[in-house]
Length: 355
Image (cartoon, rainbow, N blue to C red; front, side, top):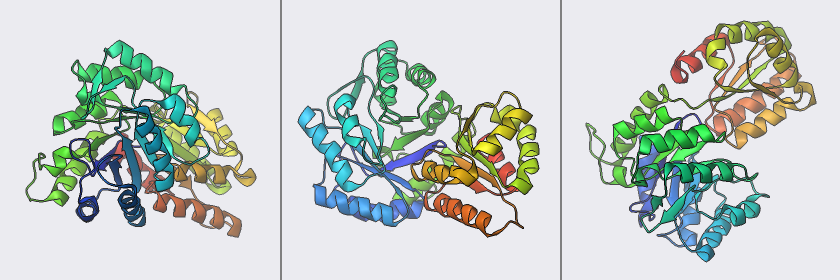
């Protein structure tokens, strides 16, 4: 995630009864990460809602707020049936994670002790951070859903502590109802945040009325806060043979910024960059001719890349065109920025990395 805003069709920890009708306003406002809770609507209506979000090109999130074990496990099974992209919340990761292992769902449980409904985060900064660290060690846990502003203590300290202790994305949730809190979330290193009740109640300042205007206002605040974000971005770096020298020069020019990011590259390109620009943290995949491009495609499909820099050879042969077209199609489908030239890559850096 590149510091994303997730709109929740929920109020007071329950999916709103008219969620499908409100979805049109949310989509018109520009949101593409959209979720709902496991309580408030029957399964058939949630399934129709999830289908509507997918067909509109959105990414589907289900957040579990049920407190008892039976309901939480039932909700996890429902997430599989709903074919959501991300399952947020819940407190029984040891039981839920194995259920999801054979499915493409990304899982972000709650760290810490969750009590009541609407949910409240109990404990201290230290105990919640310890819980977060333990959760991220589970193989099928892909990140965390931190109820930061439902914590009675020092919220900025809590967010910074959890984000710095974990090497997986952290989404902040619960009572994010003003611009200052969005900025604090970004500065703490979060990968994203959720808003539901505050937007449905019209709490964000806008020049227009309506839910669409609320969504547009939050997206504007998100864009501004993204430049303050301290979370490392996951960026793929690839180049056709005739453009490897261009990529090497581009990476060297932005080396100070890129050293703070998580870089992924196909094998040959990664080896070249590691040799040319010391200090980069690059995860090397297979060489492109041996499946590296397909591995990148899988990372795009599961939402694990924030941007793709693919310096393409405009005079390349047919096989190169096929690889680029496949990655471009996936990037469009999953709303992942893809830059195919130095000028376009400069825009990605300046827009989201402060370059």
